[in-house]
Length: 188
Image 1: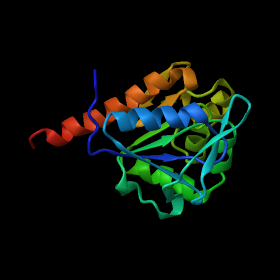
Image 2: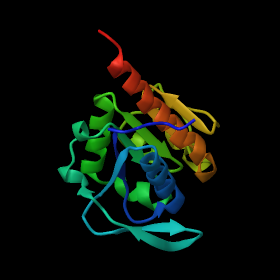
Image 3: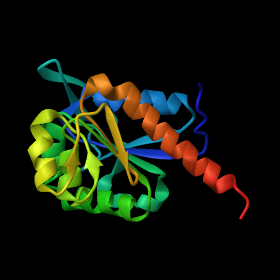
């Protein structure tokens, strides 16, 4: 089934050390479905991926996180990798933006190690979530209910375990955004 995300705006937040596939697969797949997808980071310099145990390619950054408002976008995607979310969770502007997206009822999707950002933003308390296995205890200690599933969606928070889960992860993001479109089109 082809999904039509025309008119939807999605923000990916990442920095150096993001897992290459966890940024590029959602970026490409969501664009292919018609969404406008942009990348934000802590500064405007291109950011470098981590792939197969070494530094990989770079991507252009569209925005600085400090300049973004959650109301400008419909969803937030947080790629993993060990380095990327570990650096980002120390940045107050990033954590504030994640909280703002969630407070506005927008989709917040995190894969692999990126649920560390949800832990830091205190968004997992009482929520079901999954993550890379090494993040399991952090999710539980933050009050989350960790489960070993390819994708978990709970109250607009979408989480996945690793790059193998990317098809399910992207599909769930699309489904949530399509549900939004249907709700917007229903008569009041």
